[in-house]
Length: 408
Image 1 (cartoon, rainbow, N blue to C red):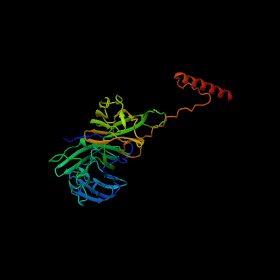
Image 2 (image 1 turned 90 degrees about the vertical axis):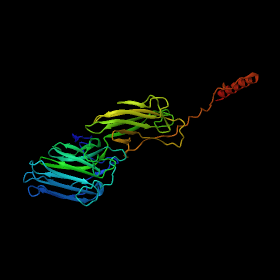
Image 3 (image 1 turned 45 degrees about the vertical axis):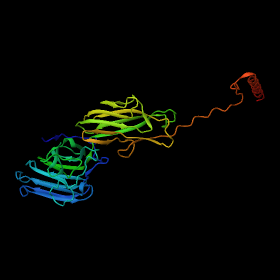
Image 4 (image 1 turned 180 degrees about the vertical axis):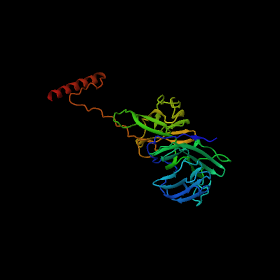
């Protein structure tokens, strides 16, 4: 059964897709491609292909194809090109429902025939960090269906259908999870960690002006992690051995709609810190590990995260008082898994780096203040009195102290 997606709009819906960290770039459309066109009735029942090599293209080559079905109304014209950083598809008539436009990435084969193994097994999951394809749509005058077809090899393919609304006049990003693909191949489904070819198949019954921008892989979830000083034992506003850190983790479903299931967060603390038992809290799900004495791992089972929702976890870690002076930072990074995701690492949102660990600078504990120096008039009462000799010394010390006081 074909799975049809309503438009899954991310938080980037009001802006173009700028590029996901560590994404597999399918096409930036920075390499222009001249227009191809078909006009009925002269070109009905035929197809035209054009391919080009360049930068920003998965596999190094992009193929464009247009077809007109024999039943399409006379006078209908369709065209496609790549210019201005976008793939542009135009169709000037509402008559006729059977016209297709294809964009194909299958390696540098120099033909219009789809090579289902041409990409040589590209891992679209990026080692389990990504579980979706993000498509930036710059314009769409009328509703259209975009089929995304993924092939691993001959007979092993999957397809998802993205229903675009009409009336798009500014860039919006649409997310198509790998879990939304259904089996298309007669041998079985595509394997997203070993892809041989990808296609966009555009089906648009009405007249159309469709512009597609960047296409790349992404994650349906995001995970951020911050570390802040919670208990400042020495009152110096910097982290030292003996202080306590508060970590805040936020796991968000970045899709406007669509649920991600079996979401789990796991975090093993830096070896120079100790988890404060009972400090682990979560706004959703259950704490599996972290609140028992001796726990060194925080584990949270969020269950399902609906589209647009965020779960927040807090936990505290005490910096070991015996941390050597050679240790200058506490480094920590958590891991999120879910259906289709196995290796999504947390990111420190306060740095420019992508998907980086959360680092807290640590300085050696300040030295204790020296004992006060005895001054004038300091009492000698600290001299122990033991026996007649001790008593005589005490009396002598008191007399000397009194004499000094009078002289001063």
